[in-house]
Length: 355
Image (cartoon, rainbow, N blue to C red; front, side, top):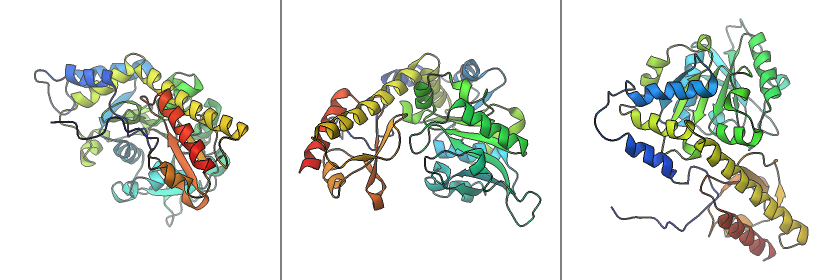
């Protein structure tokens, strides 16, 4: 097959737009020769358990799945009875970006709480953490947080531990959507375990796709007492890969060495470069009318643009509106974003805001 796309086209719409990291592609190729037992009984999926234990400690179990929505839906379903509900930020992916899958596929009620920065606090959780024993109310039994959040912000270890303690004291469990967990770890300068298992997280959706994988995430059970039935739920939710070795091989390639950290650190650095370039332009007057709505703590930049600028910029660089009503946009960087990409985009922003 010939190449169908223009490989020179770059963008800042999503870290899902990037290709597959060459080291991950090499891992897929290395796993390809010969036969291996299907449905996860292969040596790569067995090795993956050891790799996750190296990062999160003994006793954890990883269930590879196809995608992030599948990881969230299946993981949460394993934590809840039929009458259970999940408390989440209103901006949470499970609330606004999964097509109603938690509700329609898993039958889970989402109790969403508005936040300014995408982060929950114990006080915000308490807005929906009530009504236990009331047969007319879905029972709040899980708190779900995202790290890094959908607004590019980060929870500290202390903030996660406070949420975990608060949830556990009330008979609830803590779930973490870690679609960009590697970016969070790189920014915090901490091992993955420090702000997950050690901070009280019970079940984790571990993301690989946004950090250089072709496809593949994992539901990681950090506390076995918090989850039940994943062996069956993964199949029930159409997340059981027959050729699972190829999903597992990707995650091994990311996690066995430091590829996960190298890639995430680079993406974060490019986001900081982008923000710094715009801030420098605002300071010297070459860029006008751009504002920032969130701190840049991972690999995303959230900004507001003057009227009409976003559409003109998108003729050369793809990115998404976040809140069109206030002209807020999101710029994402990935493992393969280059300094040249960032500098060209900053120059384009300068040209369009000065027009």
